[in-house]
Image (cartoon, rainbow, N blue to C red; front, side):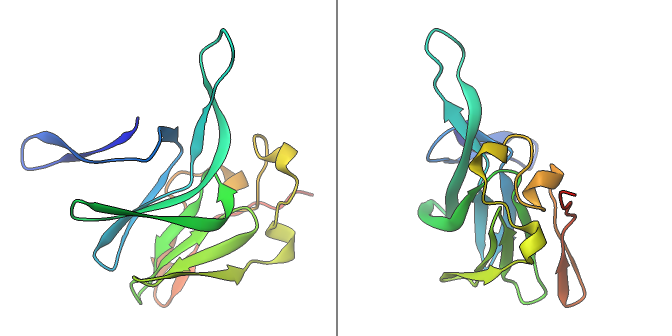
Length: 153
């Protein structure tokens, strides 16, 4: 769906439209903003229903009725997302981790065994965290942020 819905109190409403329809999006709240991160976007198929098969690099930062678009360092579906004790959003994609500190995005390396650079494996694999195919993958524990990951053998 191209829109974000909210519930409360007692009714549903549209909060903000996304820049494009997608699925497998991660969502977190950080520094007074809601971030919608990564996912799959629609790939048109001639004469057939569209397929969601293209990973997305867009981060939509929503504050009130204003949306700002940022780009992850690499496209990612099933993005790992967690908010740390510092309030920063930690977003793990196929090849790196992007950190949103409330005003900017910066990139942090991830362990080499969790990096995926072969685009042909995005559908069946992906980097160690997206490839785990876990929705809402990420949690803060004390001063750390933790993500479930798998590494190909």
